[in-house]
Image 1 (tube, rainbow, N blue to C red):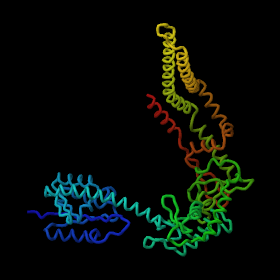
Image 2 (image 1 turned 135 degrees about the vertical axis):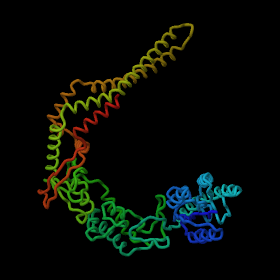
Image 3 (image 1 turned 90 degrees about the horizontal axis):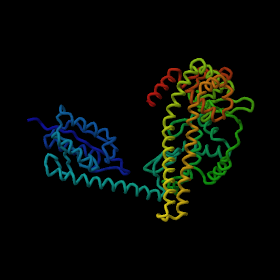
Image 4 (image 1 turned 30 degrees about the vertical axis):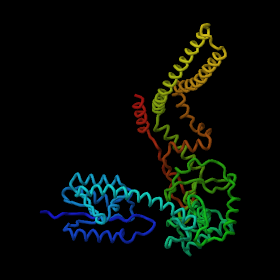
Length: 504
């Protein structure tokens, strides 16, 4: 007769307190091994999920791997053995589903501490009961954890999260001297020396100092430090601050001075260098390949600048300035060439006609519905007037007038909506579209200069994927290398085909 085979399973849940005694991983493993030895069961393997919740099987890699192995006939696994039933799951439905699936293929669960072996039919009832108890316990743990967090918040205890300047020791915040110096440096430079966010970030990066996540300092990272009340000894829970139990890094007087400086600087200044930068984001830095944005330009010349350099300083990336006027003129000229040489007016006309036809269908349907509504209301008004002339009905004239006025008001509203839709239909049925397209292509440069700053940016971003720049030691050495568009002739043709398919 074949010796019975089993896999063991142990789990430690991610509770706030450490699990000892009967629920420790070591205790669970020892009990599983001893049980198999005493009962002459071959223990094939023990699977583990450490710091995993029992509320669901999802995310428990050890359990999933074990379950899939048990289902394989060639493995000849007879049992899943756990120390306690709640190690499998604290969800009653999950537990019962697992037991049902295993029973269907003649495999069973053994829970040592609960004295359960689901080969015994009476034990199955006990599994149901224990599963429900485990679920109730899970809900109680959640309630107790939440209540405990609120109590700890009231006491000002640390409630989790990364904080530059501190480390967590025994669930309490303890000052990290080296990082605390950086926090003081940030507050001093901002409040006392009136440095800006970028200047502070750039200087920290030059010194090789990293954030808590081992990344370069940015404007936002510096701002986050300056706005964190934890540095004056407060704790945060659900958006509210209370007096914390940890040692503050910043004096209250320095914190108050920082608030004053922030308040003064909170007023949005008038733009020093007016004008749009429509290529921002699609113009790519030749060094880091990141986006280029409006640079710190002078009154005469304006430039695009690497965004990383602008936010984090030269230690992260160089400015790699490129002249705004040159870049925009080059890209506009390239687009016109692309438009005239690679995309014919007839292709644009064909696609435009397809789009207009696609848009016309619902408009015409809507117009038809509105006309029917008007006809219906007019018929109702005729009936009301016919009834009003019948003396046998003895109808109140004022009531009839009000009723007719209400109907007429509805008709007027519908007619107004119908007029708007009719105008849209007329525009989309314009016979001179080809002439408009040819004129627009021929005079596109003039048309471009009539656009607002926002419209220019929207236009470039809608047709261009990215603009590549050559490397160069000086600004004059940097040139546009390539303009990559979102579309070409083939894509326009595909667009037309897709639209026609939707129409048909």
